[in-house]
Length: 473
Image 1 (cartoon, rainbow, N blue to C red):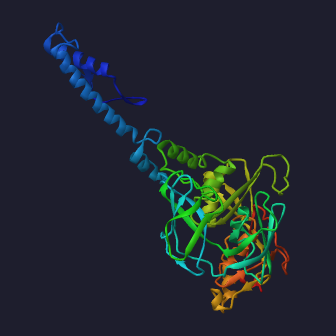
Image 2: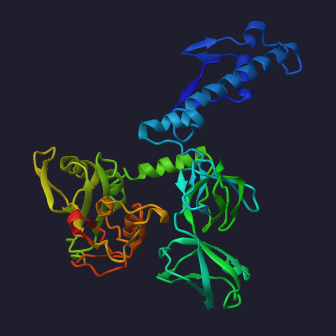
């Protein structure tokens, strides 16, 4: 049978229609093609239960299967109907790929013999309740700080205070494993919420007896990243990863402080179609969302944001009536101007910005195009405030001779996004990851000398930046 097309595309026939054409004939390219009735006469017995009727059914069923295969091949050319590998290939031309299956991930803490190395994928743990296996995805080393015996452990409300016999070096914000208390609520993985030379505090659940009894010890907990062996929605609630299924020398116990980030199965065809459609929605017109989506596809552009004023008055950002202000970080000026002229902005919308040019339109008239680069917010940092380092090799990693230079380099390397706030944890992380740093309490500010320890809010059109000359000790 010939394959038919109409204004709606491929025409697929029913089994009954195919049978009727075999019986009565059909017209193809203006010529009448004969069927059974023309060959055997109009009085032929062609009912389904006759011999010729059974032959017709066999032919028709084969024809129907062939049409279904042709339909599948035809549909594979269209995003809305393609599936599987055909859909993957269809989306290659818009740089979209199916998201693969992903494992669940979680940060786990381990304690044991100080300084013990643990190779990647060596430590396997089972989640309580589900039995799902997780493993460390990177090399890590157990903490170098020695275990600290506890002189006194008391509680006020939900806050426990640990007093040591001597000076400890557990940093504020780090995790410790508490053990030996006869009150179970004090034991386990705890995050230090404050630290003094002889004390630390952490939150405790319930109302255990105070002061605690028993021979209590605090040990430094080393953090590492772990993933589930299986992909998909593998759950590991906080505190579920405590069973070590593959022993590693030096590791005594493990535990996760928060729930695992759930993984996913391979993206389905419907999910992929929806995501691809959403990615293309940014190409549809001069909306703020569309402009931003298009700009971020330009080579070299790392961040972009769009402000728009649809009112008849200048707004609080100083944006003129019926105008947009585009802030772009990275990318070539001419690429950005051309995009804004060709695709980004509807007629009659004024562009406000410091980077200005004029592009000649089809009528030979100059059309103004503009955008702005983000304003830099200078951040000063006192990395030496509260900085405690180790100089005794018997106590673990020693702070190197160029340690301050390493800290300075880490701070300068921080990439703050457009409008991204400056968080204390980000500053502290850059300092604490240098070998030999025991603890730090940096101050940072937009003024010099810095006195601030809280987060700094950065406007959406600005970007924070730390220069090496603005880091002091």
